Image (cartoon, rainbow, N blue to C red; front, side, top):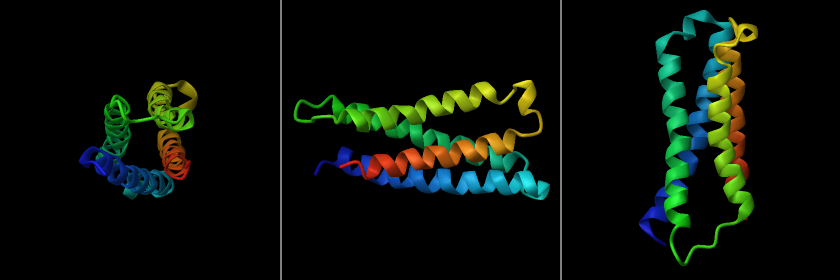
Length: 122
């Protein structure tokens, strides 16, 4: 097994754990304001960067001649990137005012779910 493949596997678990933790943190911070503030948003950024790094590593792996990429794997992987874009686009919507932590809590848990589903695809 290659080092890049190992990194992709390890980063998958980091993505899942980080988004699970941040998702729960955001939901708790929505309920208990003392848990909110800048640190929660720093956590969101770190968790979302794991999804971006996972997609980059996956794209590098897919570019290898000996790699056959499952279409569903690519779909779930890049859906996480799309989800990040959707979360970002809705953050300043008038109907989300005061509900940003709920948005990112649910969104991070969704990204975690995509990671879990992708990990067990095949």
